Length: 383
Ligand SMILES: *Cc1c(COP(=O)(O)O)cnc(C)c1O
Image 1 (tube, protein in one colour):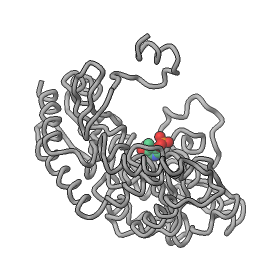
Image 2 (cartoon, rainbow, N blue to C red):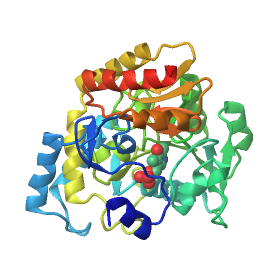
Image 3 (cartoon, rainbow, N blue to C red):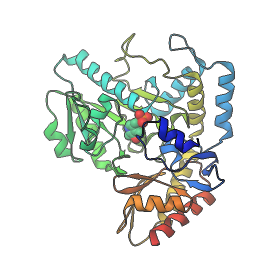
């Protein structure tokens, strides 16, 4: 049996798959027939240094050759070094390591409730999230996700979540003496690459500060250089109370993290939370390589590439949203799935989000690869 037949026979069909890739180099992928594809997806914002990045491979293999796993009952060097790097570069104070975005958000939700419980007692547990948000697939993170279509099959969901429109007045109308946290993505990813405005983010930050409501920023997709900033909140000179991240954090290996500021750093104490794999030494070594390399120069380059994309997609029926290399493209008169399919046929893979085409290319994509991919996209849009 070939790969597709085996997949169909033995794997739950929760994804709609198209191609089986054999290998890749930076932002170029090859299938088993030798067909070439430009990669504008980076594994949904994960392979931020593209495919076969030698520095990342060396960090991973060096660590794997020394020590692959010890459990969190022991200290490991890569975890300690990574935590220091993350805190120093983000302004946050402490880290908890998880394995994915959903898990990071799950932990953040637990931490927010514990913070409030410790300080105010048991009746202050509500968390406000935004409509069209996406926070993950576990029960708590799915409940936090503000999209009805995710709330159909798995009742009962958790108590204590409220969903606001993306306006300050809508949020204010939901705040009560029960509110313990507000959780946002600065640019909604899965929901359709919808950026929040700077004024909205800053006002929300001030409201939270004033009422001791924790501001949780979900940087699972926007984090780790994706938007042209190490974490997207850093553009606004604010410090959230809790930051979650994952996706690109370890450049291709599964890793998530919860970052806590000086207000929340003491919430998680001995035995309050845990994970067998969280912060695994090989993943931590990969993430250390990633975070060390996301310096000013690198991030400036991400913003330069955004300019190239915006310039090339300046077309009559096209609108571009987002920041850095997290961009949404809406095309008048065509559905995003139609465009996605035609791009694939011409050797370009792209994502969709809401009713947009979503571009998340590797942050290291070469200008040649970028332009080659954009020509395909333009042709499909015009065709
Ligand atoms: C992808 C994503 C998640 C979920 O991450 P997983 O690693 O798939 O669990 C959560 N929040 C945001 C903003 C995401 O983009």
